[in-house]
Amino acid sequence: MPSYIRASGSAAKKYRLFFQVDVISRVRIICRLCLYILSSEVLHMKELKKSNPRLLTLIQTLLEKGHTTKAPIWVAVARRLATPTRRLPEVNVYKINKLTSDGDTVVVPGKVLGTGDLDHKVTVSAFGFSQTAREKINEKGTAITIEELVEKNPKGTSVIIMGG
Image 1 (cartoon, helix red, strand yellow):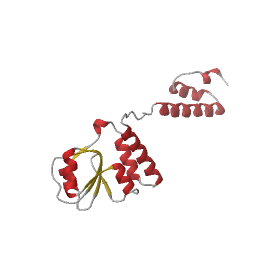
Image 2 (cartoon, rainbow, N blue to C red):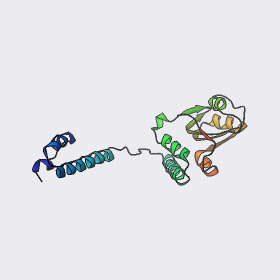
Image 3 (spheres, helix red, strand yellow):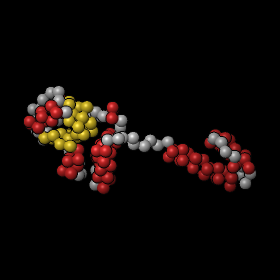
């Protein structure tokens, strides 16, 4: 094999050399380009840099439950929880009241805040609740954690994702 095929360098340099060689060497160059592209994509994937152990275990549990029960809602919630903490949604009680009806189940992949009131029964599941939000929700409905909702409804049927 000619020495210029083995020469290290960028993918563009190797691509320019593509037209200067025979068919067998072209196949080798294409394979090396594919490996180069794949390896660079794998090396630049971001790792999860969360430090909250409850959040890490929740994300892992949601991904496992979503794949084993074939419930895409849990995978979607896990992906939203994997975003940076400053971008997690904060949903007020009045918005839950406005966008739901009696008997709905809502999951908030973030925090529920206590502005507003509920006037119908609703089950709200979230990663976090403010104290006033928990009190207001428990007056009319139920406030539970996401872990409890996953145990209660593993398929995720008729669950609404709110806030992002």
